Image (cartoon, rainbow, N blue to C red; front, top):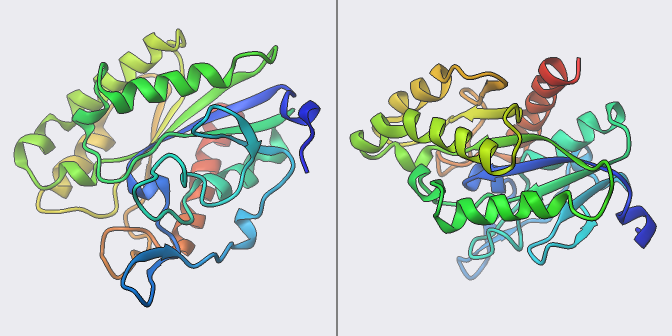
Length: 248
């Protein structure tokens, strides 16, 4: 059990944002009533640890465990995502407590993450709240996995790069962190224009922005969401990218 003292320790903070594959659908199945629910299976790479906390929807720090986005992507059934395997893979390399700030919401397009939109403003609000009250707490990176919803329209796919670049510029400005490290995931699934979105994601050339490619990771039967095993692998890929580029 975490004590208040533990919760108020210095935190190294990571923002988790995007859509359903970041929110986590690993282990989500249909029950006997044909409704989706998480099967409750937690791989060893996702086990809770006292050094890993999450910021709840009510802006309170609490021990982190899957499903990390249960109260954020609250209209959907959430399961295993990349957040916990990422955190477990890097926690030994960081000083202090590791704080995760879930912000992802399933089924959302990049235009819904524009400045002024509810999703964007909530992400910025949660990020700012995460560093309040504890001296030396700092945001270390934004992990971004989104784009599947922009693959069904050629217009949306062609606009993806400029929309993502605008998001990067805006969040850095609004957090007063012009060098904020951003690790985006090139999507592994989508509709007709998936290649255009993937090309946009991989072609963004801005300082401290890197791309991890999810292509080839195993998908569930819906051909859209990553399996639990794939989410674990992705979390470890994100950890390797962070440690290599930003903590080396």
